[in-house]
Length: 363
Image 1 (cartoon, helix red, strand yellow):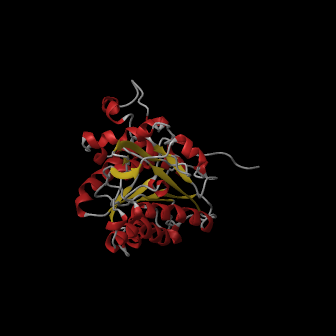
Image 2 (cartoon, helix red, strand yellow):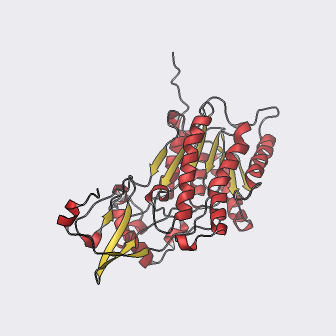
Image 3 (cartoon, rainbow, N blue to C red):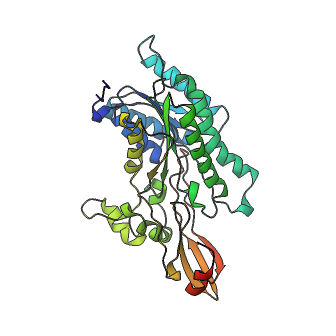
């Protein structure tokens, strides 16, 4: 008979060890908190000296609040040696804490650190390419490789890669960044097969998230989120439920971004024992943004062949449509900075009439 007995839901990760990169703030810090609340021990990675104090304090707070062990580890995941240093430092720290002679095991790896720079193709260069790919792609690869000797051998392990809707949306200015997230998702699928007897491997794809950077954005920038939010069912404001600042700001942006705990909650769900049959997937963590094709060219929403929309507001001017592409980037989670791009303007010829469109071969 199959044993279906599962650990208590409240602390189903009791005593397990997780490594979270980019853990000093934003989504990374929220992931650490929810994993700690489930009983998980943590190695909280941060990259720069400026993040040391906040990470150290967060580790102390989590230990006191949830009665778990938390170790801050400084390592540059974008460097060639950083991922291996993170693993060796984590092993050294927890072997001192665990019972003598116990086997060191890494149960969860969350590849959350990342960086973004919004560049049109004409502005892309080798430096920007290397910077983003080293942190967003090479870093997770080297970290998983370094963790390999310590991953479980019974399918109980979890690897979670934090991707972005930019991986599929084809947004202007994201030649490099969107490519890094698409590469991360490709590695997710590959690792899910290569490591099937040891860990499940999944990714999540956040949209707009209420990070510190998001909250500090000017009103005019937040106003560009209206088309995005009104096509996201879960972005609708709930009176007497949502935070007062979200309710107050809703008219400006047409809804609300994700709370940090909502993104972290998806990660915790993937890490649960009940998620053991889910692997190789990109899990929705964006409120299910929906594309909508409107006949009114003054508010055109490009209907892509994928499930992710490129949201556009169109304005007519002298026979051209000035397309403002409304983009909201997730927290970059480098541990130091987050990047939210400005809207992009593109001029296109006037669209064909409905009769002309009906005669075309364009779907």
